[in-house]
Image 1 (tube, rainbow, N blue to C red):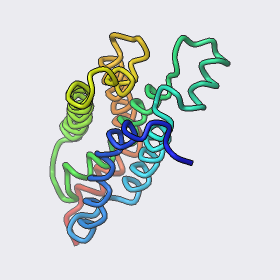
Image 2 (image 1 turned 180 degrees about the vertical axis):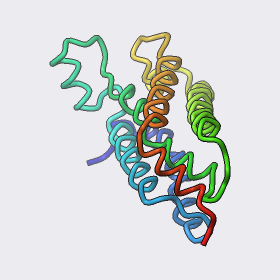
Image 3 (image 1 turned 90 degrees about the vertical axis):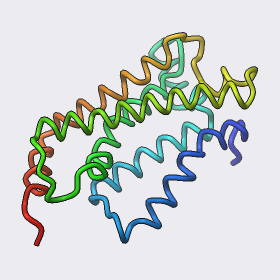
Length: 183
């Protein structure tokens, strides 16, 4: 089955088309934790579904909109929350190698800052691409669905997901494992 809007699909998947080959080719020099790979894969699956249909028309979001009487399809909001929740661990693995000594709060705060920065960067790039590619089609690509506060809400959800991930009890185990001296 072909994507609904091929041009939007290509724009939505450009980051994936760059990131996946980089991770695959760099795996011998830089290895993420198994959990980071799983969480990254789950996030990319959610993103791929959104880009296939275009985020504002994903059937799951439409069912929720109709079933719950919502004003818009919130699938994109789910993915922004998942961005912070699921990409927190890969961001932490990327920023802090095993054996790196950093205070637990600083590790969590800096990883949160990476997620917040990536979210901001994505929203700004999305806006710039929409203006440069086709201003008339930009609103459809942005998927704001009439919400002028869409970008700040999306960034807030990514930050909320990152905060939830930072509070996860497994963070203590990660900290203990990363503080151990290399063998």
